[in-house]
Length: 207
Image (cartoon, rainbow, N blue to C red; front, side):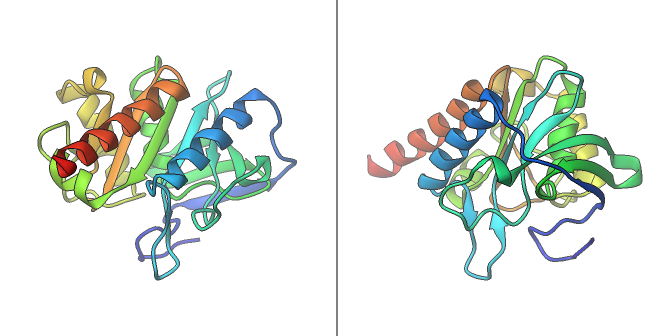
């Protein structure tokens, strides 16, 4: 399924319907996703397009990611996450297995995991003021690479080759207005990086 509109899945998707994942992995994803939603970093635009997603690497190389079309929900459950079994940016293809289809940013999450085997979790949020402040000050992807595309996946991998993004653990998606990504060895580390950046912005605005 494809769409040229921001926020929609743009890759070819092979979706295998399967039962929801259970266990501590999905519990931590639910907790962090709902926290980010309360902060307004994950949600839905007035036109109904959702934004923000997060993922956690699993043993064997696959990863759990929030499903597409879940941004409007104030709270998620295990049924809103799916396992991405395989990605191929060159073919613009994602294979997922679970109760929902994978996030529209799955290729971007996969690019981070492929770039650094030490990454255990990835968080993608939207925040206009934070995006404007950090763009160009922290590693920033090629502004011609749009959201959810193979070009964005390649631009992310270029950051890992050409910048100190491993040190920052945070980057701006230059061709994806409002979009930022953070990563870490754990979900807590990735999530706290976003929360800290958001808190710092609020403190500056209040100063």
